[in-house]
Length: 292
Image 1 (cartoon, one colour):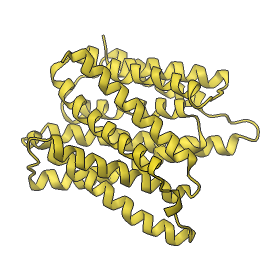
Image 2 (cartoon, rainbow, N blue to C red):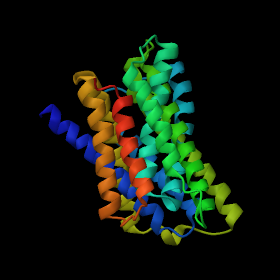
Image 3 (cartoon, rainbow, N blue to C red):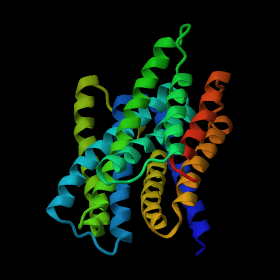
């Protein structure tokens, strides 16, 4: 199969998973619980998918320990994303999440002697400008806008630290245990959400069983398969493709498709300020990926 065809499948899988998360979250009534239910279902499908496609799930104590921390942050990132999707623009949330690539980039410079080039510094400046354009600090929407921005920043940091932990694991002698690492992570994410479902259900006193329809289960399953495929394919492609091609296409191309989906599927009507911010964010992501 062509490398570029596999790359296309990866980008589409990421987009489909993102759209399904947004849609499933938007149709639920008891959102606090359903966010955890969605994460639990997706994580569980990811675990099953990894078992089916992995050659080996061997894991050392180091892999298990780091995988546990990775799983908790993965679960938090998923829930923060769903909450941000609920109250803010889908396109802009995706842009801010993608900008988190600056965190593993800086970790590479600080801990693994990787170079930071001028175009990446320009990307950081544009990233900050993107943040400035993201929030509407005027009028009645100010409170909701600030809350969405805080949730998006939480997603930004969680996603960034996910990248750091992946990078950390792959720079050790245990790098061959990546499938086991991901399996532990999704297992912990599943358990985390199961615990949070019990806590949130007791807190709200509401049940979510009536919201678990066959269609919702199917969408969660598809999203989980897409998430697992995206992780597995990107791992493979990062080793066989030039970074100058792979990262800009995965990040920049995915953002362009997300922006189109927000307009076509979710009928988002953003202000000129936010569209300018999205454009700046896409350019920032491309620069942070260092395509030059």
